[in-house]
Image 1 (cartoon, helix red, strand yellow):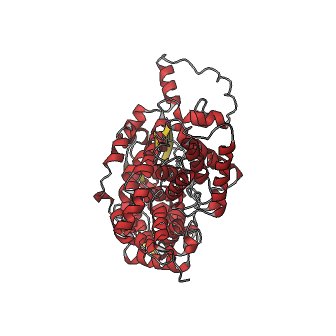
Image 2 (image 1 turned 90 degrees about the vertical axis):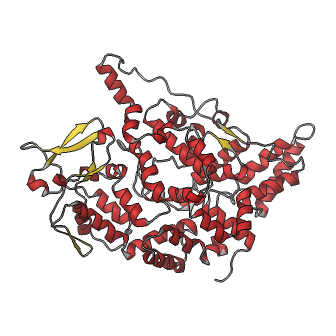
Image 3 (image 1 turned 60 degrees about the vertical axis):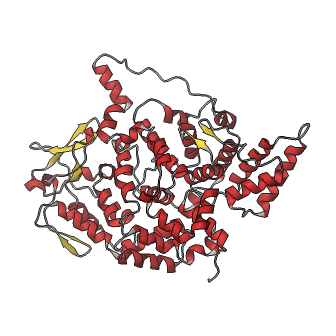
Length: 542
């Protein structure tokens, strides 16, 4: 196939994949600079002034706190109650009140009554506030940051190295994972990113490696498990105590999900050997928000064989895990698996083998340099094939962020908005499996989620989301329906609108024009056109 998109469509397509949605000013800038220069600028985010969004983020106090401070200032409700009861300050919890009445779309959009899951997001100053503010930060950056490609990659890697926030102490560790592990390495080197995740307390806790003890650790002295307020912790075992053994969770997911892929050529024996290499990689006082620490007493110092490489048997022990990470980062299966996943994200669900192979070569030749890998994908002929245009269905988060960017909406990104993303099927940081959310259209589109998407579009366009404001006056160039249509169609879809969508909008405008007495004002027309365009099949795709 040698056909390609025309220049205007190519610019819109490029921005729809490298940002959370094109804004009019982005389109104009990309046209003036040219896509190559625009991409180069985005690949160097430190050179882009993002002070405006930084001012928003500065209003979120939990983003400046370390895990120990978060645990102290935002303890779990049960911990607060237990401590209060111990000191006689809090009485045991009484029976819960009757459940709230059923939620209706009118109640939800008006903000008069929140659905139960939204109410839960806003309750108290416990750990829910920690994850809520992290979600607000991610949304603000997606919607308002000028460093759009960096935010796209932070979003991608957060899902690739998925962590379920509700597992134990991870609700307090996830903020550091995003800020100290993913964000600094999102446009860096894959090997460094992988190493950072391997030493992240959030990952060590989520995949249980912090508990893993080698079967021959410390000359069989062994470790027992002691219950703490934040889970179990390994301690030196007393005589005849039940000992904790090897945990293979991280070793398995490291190869299957983070590097080689399920068909990457490893065996169950490799999983076990990798797990042995990472014994002793644990968390220093997890109940106090401690960081990564290597404990030799937990490590298996015996020789291991991983993918044909002999590891260990001498040295200080920590290098066993480091060597595994180096082997996996440089493995051809990792190059192909990561390249396929990136091509699937940026091009289509089933990207051409030619671009995947080319990207894998770049991965290997550049030793995992992420900007070089992205350049290979985003400047490839396959990226601009007409079949790639609007080939990807937006996730709920992408849909909402792109809506805000298209219409210059403002929001506090608090519970009402996060609740809408949740009801469309993507509660942030709540995907339990280490796979992360699937990057497939079938994961996002069904009758229930389509209705939720349309409800969101109507609520945003009608200014019925609490904490969110859409300036309808700024979006209304005149009372002329054609002018309103032209402006909004260009903002939302780059002017590329199907005949069916346009016919639906025209019919709806005629209906409100014929309803009641007199002519409707311009704002109802703007609201209606915006809602229909945001809910259109075209806008569901990027």
